[in-house]
Image (cartoon, rainbow, N blue to C red; front, side):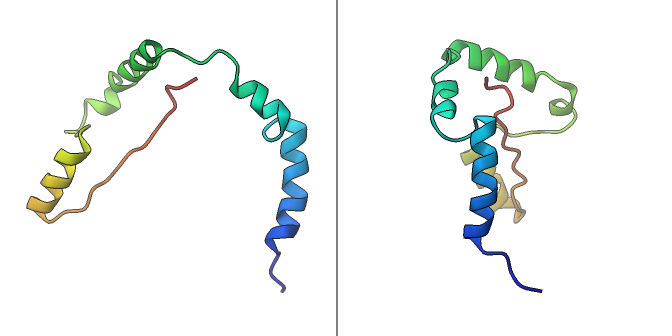
Length: 87
């Protein structure tokens, strides 16, 4: 079985993305749509962090504090990255 080249994948995927408006001029126009204000983003983030999943564990939201704790305890950092609160 031969490996698919990146060029073949790009030649197949990019036109589909262009039709969907995910790349090209349409994507730029979508990106220029009303951007949420910092206050709106903070509000959405706070709503998300108020969900029960974030109350059931002792989450640390400070990266530097998490690094320090991991170093002291000899454990790794389990990180949850999300921007689902963004528009």
